[in-house]
Length: 169
Image (tube, rainbow, N blue to C red):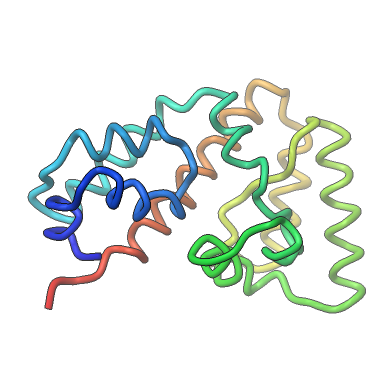
């Protein structure tokens, strides 16, 4: 969907367009209410600003079905556009039994520490960078980590929104 179509779309259609970016309804409603946007950049800036208002509960709910790093989207119950985004984002993680076990243990360490899944913008990062970030974040206190995690979700949502916005013909 291009920007003009998004600006003119019925609210339900606009919400379906935004849903694969991040399943936070308040974010979707605010972006839809802010239409029309004069440029892609204006929409992306509004999306960035709106992400700052996410509560811990909204982030947790949004991640309820988000795949763990190293997990296939189908195993997390994702399909369609959201699964496609996840596969592309995690392309650098690699595959194979050794990689899968490495990530199972890393995810378990994080979940034992924070009681939540590890979330990071994987797009554009190597497996080594992802693992180093996980190890570094294990040293965070829970409040700091909650802010980092929400920030990572916002980065993912913005990348997905950019990918979904088609340039007008």
